[in-house]
Length: 507
Image (cartoon, rainbow, N blue to C red; front, side, top):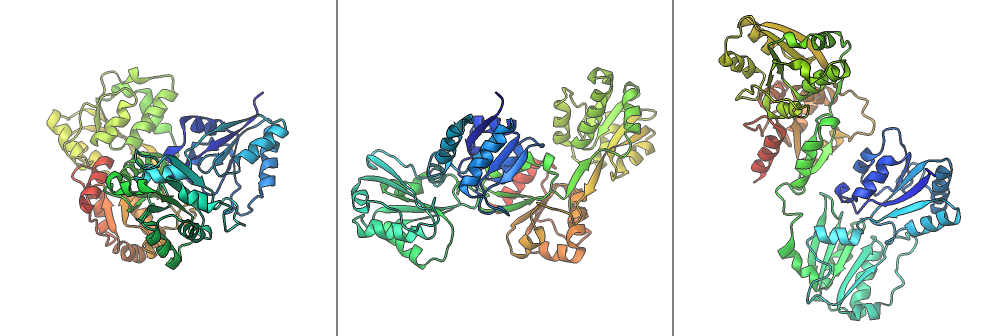
């Protein structure tokens, strides 16, 4: 029997907190039903052809719980594998138990895949150990906002306040003031340590520390309408010694990543590992050439070249993709030497089991001709140059001046973004509202696309209020042509070097 429903705990926000088992089941699903609180980046692990259904309260047509249960059973009866992504853990202050019971009564196979509960995850990311020697012998979790129709939890506050241990409250904006007042009025000491955590495990996490009385006073005066995790107990005082998440060098910095999505993973991972909030807004995308003919012709007689010069990882992937799609393989390269601009391009070759013969000391196309000339006389050598459709002619022209025979072929097209960006962040509004701290450009085409999208004058004006980071001088020069100043340009033109330069800028 193939059909099954997986009730998957997606964790409290950070997409890296889902379990390996959860990811595996998500990737196998034909249908994905997800809550509005589930991080959208997790949906990228679903199959491209999987049906995705937002059943949360923020969906255009939010579904009632009963309707969700029937939908799960209906999809399973169609013979499909269904992934039900749940915020936190399915069986901790969630409707996962109700959904599992309904599936059981309907005779539908299901499996529950635990996730990290929000109370545990938020506290850990805030540097608060929920249990600790001397911190008391009890750990109590209180539901405060699963049922939005209730404003007060039905709790024996007197007994709870007397417990010597830690209390973790899931608190909606309506419930939080009542919970704090109830703890204090039923005997919990005002001087007891407390931590109030918003947006737990995300780069936007905010943690407020203080005594229970102090936190209660702040909440009464606050107009904040977000749900929160409240931790009460001696363990909360350990935060100042155990903070790790919100003291990282880029914590809270909102950084716009304009790189094509399929090549942005390394950049995003590095930024987020340092605490930044990476906002993905790809301004260019990579497409196949209009005509594979010239590239295929080069692959058919690839052994005749003395050198192949790669100016980007995209060129490597395009050439190797066509070579391996033919009747030939890497052995066809024989004694052909390989030149790559920078270690990142070299890494793309390494993925195909190929070693680079030459990398210029300067990671820019202009330095290639000079580096090849220094390696030996290039007169009469046959050099193949696969490149983008909008690639510059500098390398080919310089090599021809040195007497080389240069064969070129368009290996891929770089398509700039236009006005149709459905599902992408509204860059203009975010810049206008000062919700972006750093804008990064990793290519001249990304700069041109940005200017095309916003207009030359608005782009220059808006980028004058943020930090602009360009991966190298060619990209910075392209930005300067539109009166955009790059405050950050690394000495090495790689993604890790760009991230290091951003860290150095803020340190």
